[in-house]
Image (tube, rainbow, N blue to C red; front, side):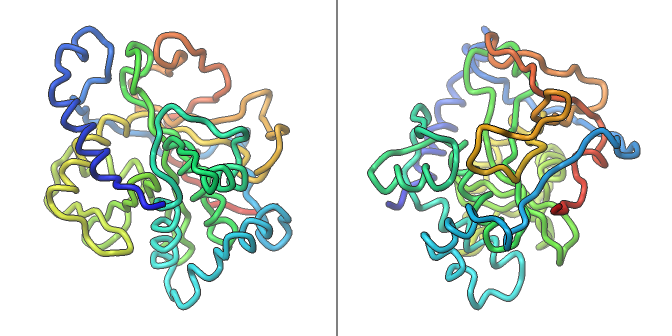
Amino acid sequence: MVKNSFVVLFSCVLLSSCSSFYQFVNISPSSKLKEISYSKESPNNLYEFYYSDTLGNEYLRELKNEYNIELLVNGEKSDIDKIKSILDWTSKQWEHNGSNNPTKQDALTILKEAQEGKRFRCVEYGIVATAALNSVGIPARTLGLKTRDVEKVMRGAGHVVSEVYSKELDKWIFIDPQFNIIPTLNGYPLNGVEFQKEIFNKNAELKLINKQGELTKEDSDNYIKWVGKYLFYFDVLFDQKTLNSSKIKTINGMTKITLVPVGYKEPRIFQRRYKIDYSYYTNSLNDFYRKPSTE
């Protein structure tokens, strides 16, 4: 089922342009962007990330075979072209529904229930894209985004996307599977932190692309206006390997690491009422953007 992402996105932008009052009373997030920075301290040896060995992972083999994912990348020579193909496929699996959850948070369950007519959130797009990319040997992780005022607002403080590691480019790449978008600068794909910087700087060379090519200026402007506020706090699971299990690997009971801009507080509450008691915090890009490796 093909969804019209940009109708949804335009509606979000339209509503946000009329929401000054809601921002004033801390109901919805502020759209005001800040210049932020991160440190480059040496990585902390405490933090360890777990990525899937594609050839040895039965779950990924089942996903790849059930949905013919390898066919999506056949003939694609570069990492970025393979990423575009899987991103495009993921974005078309169901229509977005921001309040519907699958019975289980794994790609096979999500896709099965989508085929039955169910619709899901940004979270599920991220999970499916991450697993699909991993299934063809491209390391990926589901990336949580949170606004600067995540603790104060009542709603709309988070979004979920994915980041993909390209061995060819030796870097992490931001992708939004819900909206079928990759940000680039002078033809070079960006990670989440780089994307925020170029949005803040209003860089005219910032372009949004997908398998079909470059987005129109109107669609790009709408997405950038909408997504910018979410590119403040970034978090990922340490365990990107345990794909269909409640036994997610932890470090001293913590499941995630959150990247926090230098000089800003560590968020401990999500939308006024949900405790964030599952994450370590770091200001260091060298902690957050390590090269992935499998055991």
